[in-house]
Image (tube, rainbow over all chains, first blue to last red; front, side):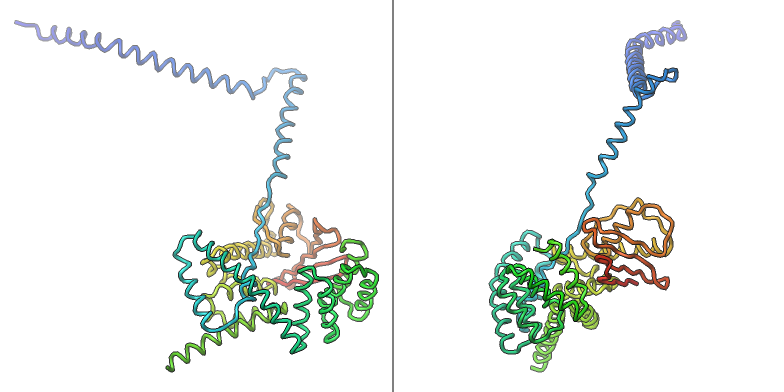
Length: 237
Length: 177
């Protein structure tokens, strides 16, 4: 008869012996990794923490480090630039150059509906082409405005023309149209300002100051007094 | 035939409103443009040129609350989206300034984008004050121009007043409510 119990015990010992090398290797690996992690952690912790039993000079050594850290923080602050949003005023040019015939309005609405689902780069190309055409129209419109002023003698038109010439740095024409505006209506602040600014650019600073003083005396305009102080201080040249 | 006539009439009316508004806009009569735009808003709300002109006029006339509706609609082009973001910042700054001035809400650690609009300038200068005891009014100096100062105050408990001073002379007064 076979002794089954004894056989089972032998089989168990055999199994344990066969698994033992694997187990020992695994355990040793685990221990090594754990020990290495602990060792690294202690190394990292030791660097920033100053020892408690240190004398005064040692504390002094630590202080410059702290100072350096605060300096870095304070230097970082000015680098943070505040985001500044800019408005887009292209609609002004577009409106200036559109003549409101019903057909054109219909066309515009159609193109706008098409623009929405299309990809952004395509729209950009279309817009740039439009701007090019508008520039040509702007010149024609400006000539039309001059003609309209010659027919109607409207001071608002002449003021607009004076401003446009001033923007284009055509100071002689800006002076002429501002003068024409003042002759038609001498109570428009902006016209006097353009007139005097053009005078300064034409090298007649003293005359501009005299005109501004007279105008301020008559109207007590704050905008004119600001311009006067700017001219006198040399801020406006 | 009648339908076509009515359609043409409608379109010409639309154009004439826009034309009138632009004429007023060129004359810098921004309050009038804003009011006209408000009346004609529902008929022109899909026209982005109209929306931009209406919104900028309301902004220049200090009717900042009227920007809320254009902000939500302006989204179909790059320009419209840029302007919508610009208006949103101003509207938010106005609301925060109200909250801070009327309820002493602390804005010290707030970082927002800014704009070239007067309200944004004053908002930024107010933030720079940091934590402080509330005052009846604040005199804030422009960092770029020493002659330029702003007086920020509350009127009747529901209006915020910003007054621009140049060389101690009052130049312009903005009222927000």
